[in-house]
Length: 357
Ligand code: HEM
Ligand SMILES: *[C@@H]1O[C@H](CO)[C@@H](O)[C@H](O)[C@H]1NC(C)=O
Ligand SMILES: *[C@@H]1O[C@H](CO)[C@@H](O)[C@H](O)[C@H]1NC(C)=O
Ligand SMILES: *[C@@H]1O[C@H](CO)[C@@H](O)[C@H](O)[C@H]1NC(C)=O
Image 1: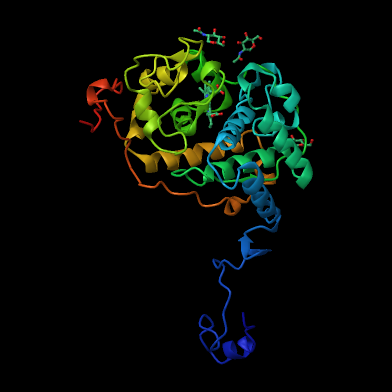
Image 2: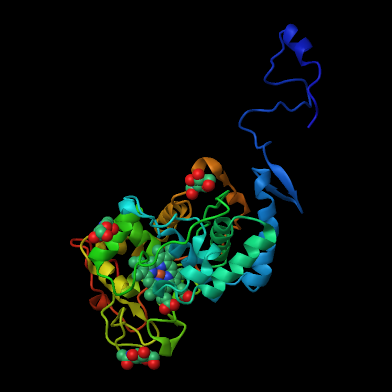
């Protein structure tokens, strides 16, 4: 940028200050001159964010196998929820977790031993090592890794990422993460205590669109929760509303509901939430609206990833999160799986039919 010499002189002569001398760029308050250069042509709004570009490269190359939407991606996304949800707005006189503080990573040996966190140990310990390697807070590596991981899934929105959580945390107590065999009453009460509405819970369950299971029926390890587990799409919301006809594995396990397909496991709480009058309309609304699903998901995941944190300590490093891959063929609405018809949909939002035939 050329320095605007002679401006005072021009003002004295009554020149139009806003235009300035020829070839001289005047800084305006809204310009993006705040951008800092992080090297390799990358920029960020805050220089505290630059180090996350190095971490991004490490994550994509080593943890996410070259930028895949795979098992590690799913675990990283799930870990964000299991870290944050141990939080209480009422506290009830006791410590009920510090929210999105990375305690599940810092205290992985304690928290991943809890029943609802089984299977998250590898991811938690890998992130623990990364936090140490880059000297960043456990909560920052956790919520950054989840956002980067999701960007590898076609169809996903770009999550926001804020850095600057506390370096240390206390282990969250056991029993605060919802279980697949919990009733809707129990789940909604736990979510409400953590600060989330029924609608927000339904939004968050878009994550199951890329989900698989390992523990509900261990005989079918890796069984997906919808027909497109490598795509972040609306199929999950539609398929959970299809009539259940059988079990994909060795029968009815705790936390498992009848599934519409031999190639998917249906979680009992997903089945219930899709049909409960408190959540069914929000559920159904996503089936035909990928943009709304993505838009809402970003909003509520931002809440998840900053839960219980002091926002005045955090800096917005969202610009480091990559733009996600798009779907091979964008579909606003889910499609009925082959062999299924509108009669198989257990429409549960009164008065709202779905546009399928
Ligand atoms: C009512 C609340 C929820 C319940 C009861 C629930 C339950 C479950 C269960 C039982 C599994 C299968 C785990 C296994 O067998 O390994 C699962 C998978 C998963 N959940 Fe949830 N979940 C809930 C909410 C969420 C939320 C809010 C998120 C993220 C925002 C999330 C993300 C995931 C992901 C990504 C997977 C796939 C994990 C994998 O494939 O390894 N879940 N969930
Ligand atoms: C508060 O604590 C009491 C006694 O431990 C317990 O019965 C009650 O369910 C708790 N309430 C909440 C909202 O956790
Ligand atoms: C399915 O197999 C698992 C692991 O062997 C076992 O724990 C579970 O009880 C079995 N479930 C049914 C319904 O047979
Ligand atoms: C962060 O740590 C400080 C100092 O220990 C503490 O006062 C503060 O409450 C912590 N903030 C959060 C959000 O846990």
